[in-house]
Amino acid sequence: MLNSNIYNVLVTGSNGQLGSEIKELSKEYSYNFFFTDRSNIDITSKESIKEFCRTNNINVIINCAAYTAVDKAQTDEINADLINRKAVKKLALVSQELNIKLIHISTDYVFDGKNFKPYCEEFQTNPQSIYGKTKLDGENEMRDINPKNSIIIRTSWVYSYYGNNFVKTMLRLGKEKEELGVIFDQIGTPTYAKDLAKIILDIVPQINNQKVEIYNYSNEGVLSWYDFAKEIMKMAKLDCKIKAIETYQYPTPAKRPHFSLLNKNKIKSTFNIEIPYWKDGLDDCLRRLGERR
Image 1 (cartoon, rainbow, N blue to C red):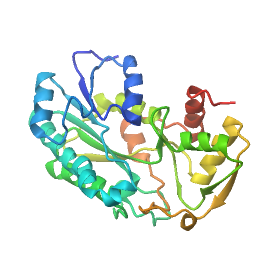
Image 2 (image 1 turned 90 degrees about the vertical axis):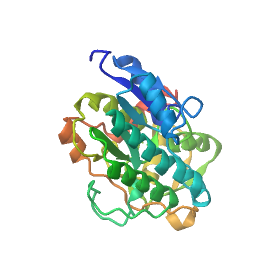
Image 3 (image 1 turned 120 degrees about the vertical axis):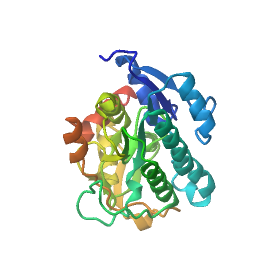
């Protein structure tokens, strides 16, 4: 345990999947936490952020706030840009001025998904959606401002006990339907938000860099959405049959990456961490939801 006087941690977007998991884990850490949402801090206002940080002597910000409605962003670029780019810029400016550690969460959607080997942090970005573009723009604003002791964590396929996500959708549909078509030609790895939350809280004291660093994080393993759905039904003992379909059979406004496997060697070696296997995360989530059979 660390001295509680050391870290005063501001968590933005604390009602989302990741923010909620951090909140639940917070009692295990001797940091002083400040959980916020749009009702008590305006992260699009530099003055609002700065005043909150000064008043509460904040020295770590974990930015979980994001515009994550991937398809809606295609027709709502102004709001997606406001949260995913402009707010990140304001947080980075305040972090630089007040010497605050900033941990910002980004996404695999910054890549085009045309790779055939896992994406390393330095690989060429090429977002194929407004969501992906605004998230990359946020990364670039943060890197341009370059507050020291700050990191960007790119993650993928996030689900948790909280909020709306793929796991909960599959559980609901698995009880309602005899058969479901699920995409098999998009490959990646799910991220259990509880596992990511624990990593973030564990590495806070170790972040010590002069320029913004980018790290990849998801659970271990490789699978398709089809494989993920099959395992959810198997663990929950639901009789719903999962049928493999191709992406074109399930058109969406925003283009998804076909391949978004993330290479996680950098975060593992830098912070000396082990990453849980995806099935272990799913097992824990289903148990918490009371759906493990």
